[in-house]
Picture (tube, rainbow, N blue to C red):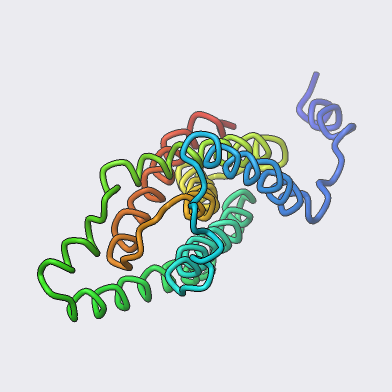
Length: 214
């Protein structure tokens, strides 16, 4: 068999990938993984007893808004990373800007506190378990995103694609974890929430080269 025959044989059954296949698969992954993450929070950690009251305070909305911005930016970047030859662009600036804004506001708030209040705002009562709880509840999302990408995705930068998948999963998982977390200090959120998302991103980066082999 010569080269032309081989190419013809391989291309005979080739079909174009639907234009929005990656986007649709990511939406399915989130639709599956996010409820599982919320269920894990409810079963393993328990929801905040004052959740209704907490929704009246801006800190809880910050806990939702910043991770959501990170997840949206990661999802947009992941769609590009999953397609060979497509530049990532500047979509990741959305997530980076949200985190930077959180750090600035948290630092300003922290600077105006007394030494005792600073300790409470930074460490809270759950800093030891917070990042790891975020990582655990994000696992269903990470698994769903990676599983959905293995079909149509063909990333030439698998480690970066895996890290983007981890940021997407970590951002969504952090939103689920916020339904449990009673901490009210922005410094706590700026440090320990971000660390939790970084752990999930690192896990995704480690898995990317193994799962997205050509």
